[in-house]
Amino acid sequence: MSFDQLMPIFLSSKVSTTPAKLPFRFTGGFGMSSRDQGVLMVGQGFYAMFAQAILFPLLARRFGCLKVFRTAVMLWPVLYLLVPYTVLLPPQYRVLGMCFCLLWRTTAQALTFPPNNIMLTNSAPSMLVLGAINGVAGSTASLCRAFGPSITGFIYSKGLSIGVSGLGWWVTGFVCIMGAVESVLMEEVKINSSDAAMEDEEEEAAAGNHSMIDALSIDAAIVAATRLEDRSREDLSKILIRLDNQDRFPA
Image 1 (cartoon, rainbow, N blue to C red):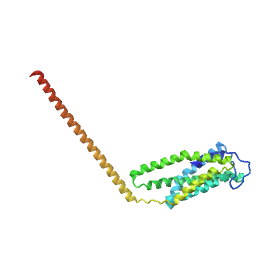
Image 2: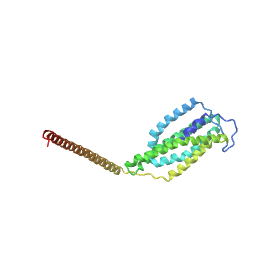
Image 3: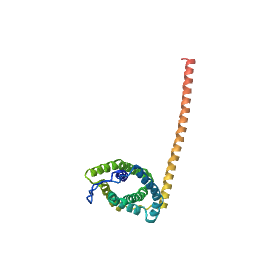
């Protein structure tokens, strides 16, 4: 999310004429128009479809979801470190360097989000709690979408004020380092297909029994209500007959 927020600002920023003081003090961007940015985004979108539909399944079958996820997560910090330095490339290579970074980012994203969702589903101890797990994960992701761009945008603006345009990128890269370290501690859960199928059958059978019990309970309640209504009608008829006899034959 932070990458998508920082990149348009970085691309549209004016090219700096101030000499850079390496390794960190430099400013400026690409001075790219909205039209040119749109062309880049379109190309990025087409490649993202290829990477997620073809590249990820091939790598996941070859190496497994965890290895693919771990490798992609470890590449994110390096990407955030290098992106700001693309403005220091010779003018004829700047756009090429930025296209390489966008290709890198799209590949890393396509190899990160799908295995993350797959491993999250496989880690559920039961299908009954899968909805709660996905709900918590979705809420956490929404929280990051809400605060991530705001925080990185604030840091980026502060970096520009002190002549360090890469500050927002590098702070985000530090957060990615923590995620990469955490990925090393992750373990992939292997699910036995026969056990999963048996568990699904048991849950379906339990659900069917509950449905049968509910149906029988409803039928019994209807019968009881019908009998009670019949008895009420009989009692009412008896009362009316007694009242009628009292009127005809007063004591």
